[in-house]
Image (cartoon, rainbow, N blue to C red; front, side):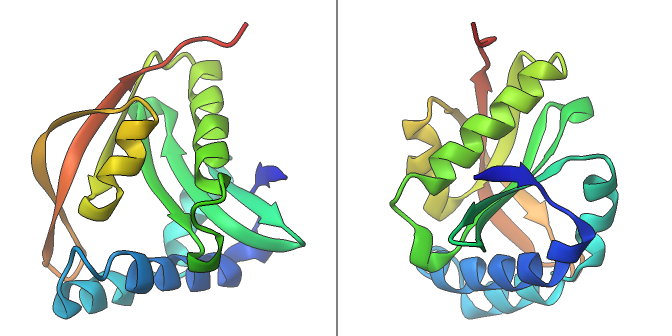
Length: 157
């Protein structure tokens, strides 16, 4: 089931977000980068997008298995994190489909994202095209290498 996140989900979102980074991104980033990245993850980062209705979760067996954050005003998918024990089961793909549908519903015809290096094949399989390497600056000042990607979105129906 995919639904909008609520403030009651905040602690579960933080845990999933941190676990996903530490386990799924470890092959692509240094320990220093992973620590700097996860240090900035707290419930406050979800407050504004949650208020706007731009945080969605995939729930499996009453547990949040994935989270996504997007911003229709920027045509941007800010984040997609899947719990390490839920990868390769279609949960991330399903959440991306739901996010893209919400973006289309908001009038967006092309989505942008900055993919972590480990996630580039996932997004490419969903039809995203690589534009080139870029960086994301963390609040700590550490810069993470990532791949700028884009996809033309098609209205459903």
